[in-house]
Length: 430
Ligand code: FE2
Image (cartoon, rainbow, N blue to C red; front, side, top):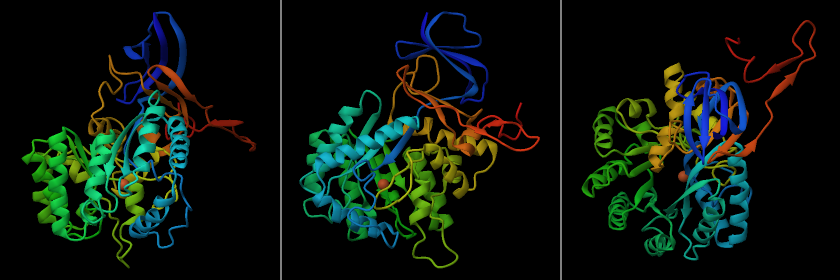
């Protein structure tokens, strides 16, 4: 007897026609033609069932603040930082909580149930930290929210930046962040990486730094991050977010660097939407894309997971909590359009991100938590292409969101009356 059975599911592994049995929030069967009784049944009708999406890089404190106090007119990263610096002193805890909760509602509807958010610790009031800790607790029944203490204005560059970061960790934020390329000098950046990795080692925490988010090929803080990771025995617990300078680095140097990253088991977190929007802004033409070397990192065995970074904030005026949109952009900008390549990029928004975040019991396997999404698409490749409707979203085996399938009604001579946008509108419809 199962609490629920999802029938006729295509699995993200590519296998088709399975029934998924769920008991007490766990996946307790993945078989064909399950005959047991169940409390509730979903007919997936040959659609894709995937583990829920993970976003390993987001800014929950800034989300949905677009236009406050003004728009980013240059569209650059640096004006975004300036703009957020204008908003931060006047923002209230209530506003931060309200915006974050609204975003989390959207995330659930998109099947996004695991989020790692950086929390700006630059303002010594730490109202951002207070608010995000409250949000973490309030959304815990349906979203696993990890928080990173992030010194947006610089660990050394901001007055009391070091003190505020430690205070945020004392308050309960569980990951150490950093922004070495934004410190005043390369040397300050290097020192900040050393100091922050030591803090993480002493406190037994993970590290996730905004690292080399610049077009400057000489921004090589990732090299220091790999060295400090090995020095402190933090292998597998350290993430380098963005890594856009690698796009512009000398190929010979990168061949050494990628091996060092693999040795240190660094998790790489490119953010395709924001990287293609913000990088290359000082170029005329040719204009660099800025996204890090996704294919080369994957081929070297490095765990690559994609983050969304922003949704409607000072840095990015678009976004919709849709990790398939992130993967879709990743396919284009990294030019990974092959079938197997697209499958690898689906991993970047699911299992790879879960590994980055250290999630336990994640996946679509026997014994995993039943945190699942049923999509109006047949497989992962079609999911990335169509960014389809999330028909059902399950948290611990309970439906937390459902949406009707997108069916277009046609009024055309000698053509069908309707098409199913996730089934008929495919290259090889049955
Ligand atoms: Fe970020």
